[in-house]
Length: 280
Image 1 (cartoon, rainbow, N blue to C red):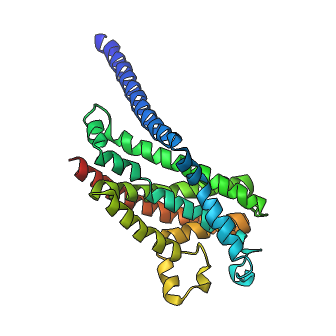
Image 2: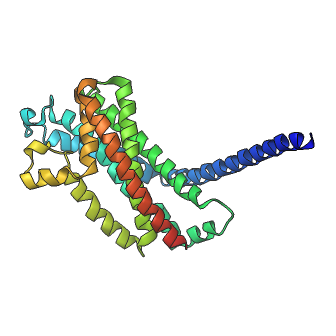
């Protein structure tokens, strides 16, 4: 009889301990995320440039510059800005994701990361807070880009649900890229090395994708290489969500989800190994 009373009490105590631990874990993630937010808010010029740069440079300047030069029969879009919108969205995810580990690198260089790791917190909360911050900023940028594209007459053919799907695809792609960036931050010795690798990765990924021109308009060897680029799969899923509608978009969306899950799994595995190696 006594055992029948004790076991439910133990189970209740265990559940309370678990809930308390989960609450503490979430508080750690929230506090670290707010640290990234406060750091960005103190750098107002950087925050403004972060939000405006992709829309201003790529969508407005680049899109209008090649508006007359682009052949609409090749791009299969009403105009070049409409075609470019999907590329700018995914390029924004690419640039933010690959730069996602910069602040961790600076924390490592000034010794703050080592001091943080010596405190009684979950080490994974540092990583998850950075993922949460980068994905939030990226989603805001994507919404700004789509809003500006709307002013130029680019209206997503799949409506608000399509916009939500674009954000999901962007976040899935961004998770893998941020994992790559944090792996670099934990592996390289200085921020000079980091930015060198960053430049080496970002430009080839942009030009070896369908961001600026369709695959059919590329030289054969570039078109073949572009098909191994996860960025191409993301763009080819986002573009019909903007231009065509669900009937054409659904097969691409289904395929990109599979590709990005595999991509994220590989990147997270490599990032976890780099983190464990760096933190001992």
